[in-house]
Structures are given as C-alpha cells and as structure tokens.
Image 1 (spheres, rainbow, N blue to C red):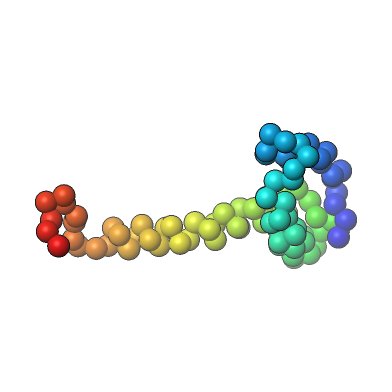
Image 2 (image 1 turned 90 degrees about the horizontal axis):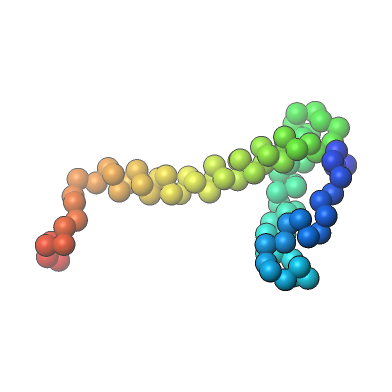
Length: 88
C-alpha cells in the first residue's frame, strides 16, 4: 500500500532532546503499519489513510487496556478488604 499523506519530517517525532537519536517508539511502527494496512484492505481503501492508522492505534490501546481492566474487575469482585491493622 502507498501512503496517502506525505511522510513526516525526521525531527517532528523525536522525543529525546538529541535530534540525532531516534525514539524507541520507531520500533513499533512496522507492527502498527501492518495493522493499519490490514484495516485499509478490509475497508477496501486503495491506500493507508489517517483513519486507518488512527483505528490501528485505538485497537492497540484497547488491547493494552484489557489486562488493566480485568485486574481492576478482579480486585473489585473480591469480598475481602485490606486494612493496615490486618494481621497475616
């Protein structure tokens, strides 16, 4: 697939103070673009569009939040409460 928007400038996404160093976030780009490509093809887009990339990012955030959400649900479902006075 070909991108529908021009590529960003190098310095635009540098998170570190040293512009010669590329952020570690760049390592995740191939996986993100693969997912965006899948979504673009599924939507029958000719190119990967910004909406496809946004949907891929949203899907990744949703998957990452599942573990946290399930952990919170498990904690709330327990019938015991911890207290500083509790003896083990």
